[in-house]
Image (cartoon, rainbow, N blue to C red; front, side, top):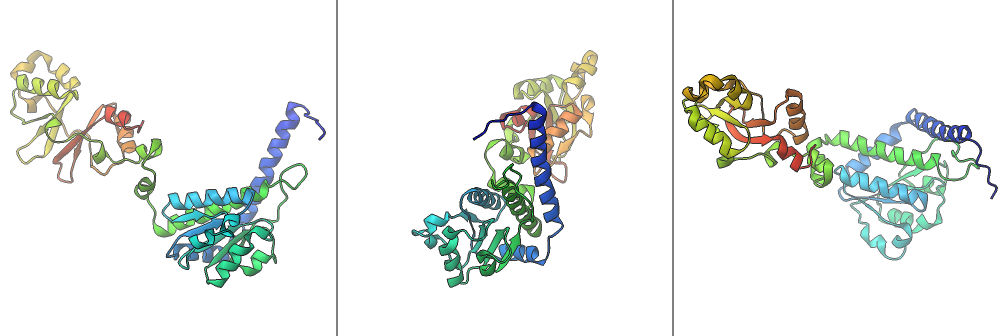
Length: 324
């Protein structure tokens, strides 16, 4: 192997060339979407079982990622290694499933048993390949072709452009399925309950304080009692609740400072700020945090459609839950 590292400009140019080559291939593929792509989406959407995704080598890595993305967006999917399939794992595949195979050459011998099995039991077969007229193309119910573009490596053989195009086409299929099924952020959270992503998709009702924890005052409550409630609850705010349970105002530290001279002689309703900002319980935690940051406030009362108090969300609750 000859070593010719070249200068920094040469290295940057090589990297830029790779990116331009692969980007060009993706752009070309976007212009060739046709009826076969729509049919592939329909087959995947109508599957009563799982999407079985397979490939070998670099295509196998791409297949694994496609399977994981399908599963995380509401389409049951599983990667099956073609060699393991030939040694018993074909039993994982049922007649209710759909097979999606990734192979740039379309002639990968390790896939033969899986293809034969799918034909024997009339299991729909979708192939992502770069060769028209290949064995996989001939055997598939739907073939999705990769663009006729060179590999981006210097010697033109290392899987680069082809794997990027396969991955992007897999993403396109996944997003099309999400769109067809009306997949929402709330649905996404069901499959991502852990980590920061899950926290950002957590709803306010799962984080808010309830019941006896809430600092609530009637409008005619003397502020001597109101201060005790605010201090004991520890949120730095108190809500003014009418007889019907409707939130009509809020007392903050700012309201206390503005009324300091006559505070002890006033009622809670006289000190409160009217029409405070509130949120419904189905608001995402990330949206509630954004509202608090924009309004420069540290707490929000959670209310129903009739403005009745359901709970209280403090900015610290968002921090503890990992939303921030």
